[in-house]
Image (cartoon, rainbow, N blue to C red; front, top):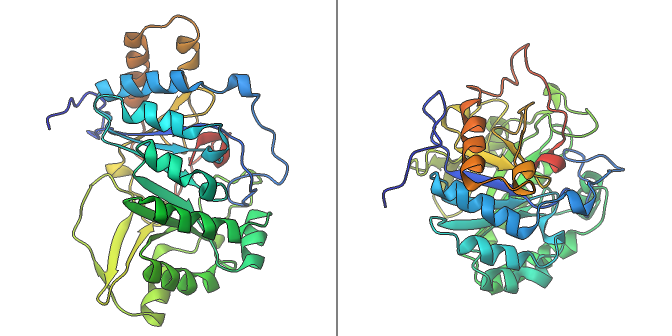
Length: 331
């Protein structure tokens, strides 16, 4: 299918993936994402579902064809399945996915699948309740596992497990998570700890690299073979074990993938961002609530793309942490 290649930045990167945060609220307080005591936006400041769908339609007209709903915890938004149904119906959108912590998934998996959701990313950093609680600052491992079981029954085409790797904390979780995902048929991906926590606890020494995680897996389980490259915009480098099981590594700190980034972001309060680490935002809510036209929304999105930098620059002296933490941007 031929698509317009309108959202192309100064470095030739074509932007086809729109990450939409639907809320900054969460029922966990993961240390790499949120402060222990978070302050959330008033609900009236968050975009309504109809506003989100309008932005998605404009983006689709400019070549975006995949959407991921994030948060905060997106399943905290009332009747998220209704938004999924709106987005699935947008001409040009091929796939709608959701990234969730899974706590509310058991109750919502069936309705989400019925609305047209086909892929889930579930955050799960440990299979031990004590470590889960140490990271999330809440209990809930049993609810996440129940949610995964419900998602499987609901018939999702793909369920990915995202695990953040933090040196001195998650080394012992790597192999149990891999064995669990191999057994259950989930696609496991390890993500390096990024400087997007709200309490400025990030330090390069705490980054457990994807290479280190891979070495542990090969030592304890067996050799990994790289998969043939698929979607060039995907952040993960995927591998397989000869006897079955797939694992990916997302290494934004040690092996940045900025050169092939195809993502744009819409925050829950209506700001376009061209990078997780952007220090600039483009206010689309003022257009949505101020009689702006679709052409003006499209122009703002093009402006956002045109201003995208070559790389996030974590490893450079010029790097500046964004003012917002992960939960306020959208994972």
